[in-house]
Length: 175
Ligand code: IMP
Ligand code: MG
Image (cartoon, rainbow, N blue to C red; front, side, top):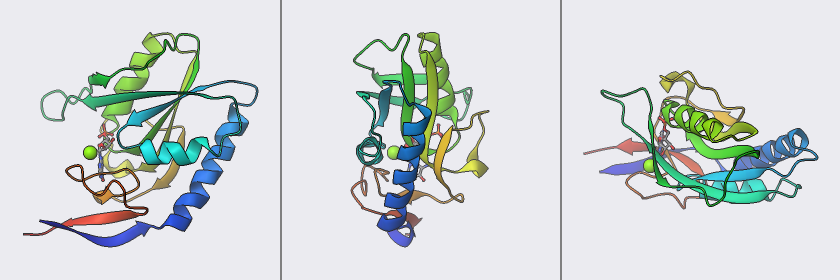
């Protein structure tokens, strides 16, 4: 069994940081029309909040991926479960992800999209667990760096549960 132990980041802190990230992205992409990509399913809620803080003529797209486990191939090849709808060749592409853990998924995904000819690729992650990093990867925008705890809410799941919690909480596994 599992239970929610502590609230790590409440709704107010989430909203404040999302607004700051949106403003930063808006400034960095001024004069451009980026294709902002949501990495499904985790980033759905963060994405919805963030894009409404970016006053630019952005385009939406989505992608669902999973990285080939740790174990034998921690090289981080990425498996595409749902691909982009449009060609991103020549586009400025901010990728929106809710959390970076090992970094394998984003490292593999950014190199794949570079291969497809994106003009620029940046990653915006709401949460970052730097102590868990195994891949050589850093996000361009990070909401909060957090300790090595398993967290749920604000799009993050445990066994597909808790994604709709409006805050980010630490999940404790019990018997
Ligand atoms: P990685 O950076 O390639 O290890 O993969 C990050 C992915 O692992 C995220 O997109 C989440 O789906 C999942 N993940 C990592 N840490 C957590 C957590 O604390 N709670 C829920 N999902 C997590
Ligand atoms: Mg998950």
